[in-house]
Image (tube, rainbow, N blue to C red; front, side, top):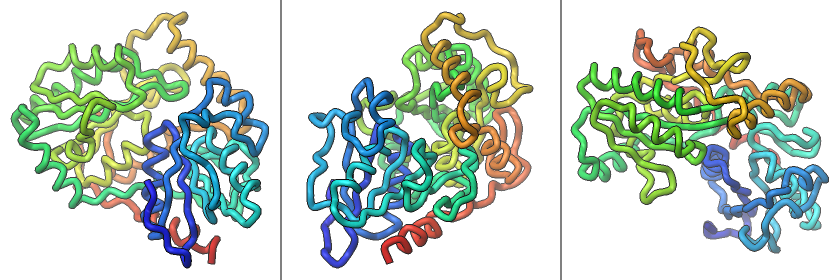
Length: 359
């Protein structure tokens, strides 16, 4: 996508990859800036992790399946995710002019290589002049848009209201959303919906495994409309707009933040095992056998987090506690004591810091 470009304004590129949450943050920031921007979608090679550590290079991306990276070069690059760092640095090197790089999240390269890093407490970055720590991920959720999408989708639902919306995430690092967790979630949301005489509106994400979706679907005992990610028109915003309450798996802080921004009561479903249990007092569920490929992947992530330097570690549990302590969310199975308060508006502050880079 290319917005109409005005020569007197900075030229902005967004490096978008495979993570929907990262892309949503970049788009929210770009729209808050109010400048023309161009989205560059990138596809990666299987060996990207090996070559992407060498600084400014395109060796880790599949250039045939990625958008063109050619002049005129941008004045500002907005990027997120480890895989895009080498690309942003390559653009800066090629441009032959000052190119500011704003990284959203937690970079793996030296912090000094970025003009601004927009991060959250889960990444534990040290205090630096070029590090902006927000309470929550960036989001741009217009409730008027939610209402419009809700009315557009309402005739297509084929299940009676009221509705409880369920946002399914998936495996994330050491957190394994397996079939046992999916069945437990299905039982709990079925109980919640039955108590409210409601139907379920469920949407999966790119990380939700087919096995988990099947296990969840088989265990639900109330009317449900299930949307599988990537299949047709995405009802994500409509489902948020239609919800009386929202249940979100605890792996995605971006989805949790957008659910809280909707103004509905939000319930978090915890999962994970051992040292990485999101909620240590949650019921212990059967788990996949140790030799299962997804279990081995979670074990590798656990080992990497324990051995990695402090700034390369990630722990989402403080974010859960902050949202719950602030009254924005509750654990699934508990109740809200009061109306959820509004989230802090950190997008405008972030946009102002970015604009100051190009003043």
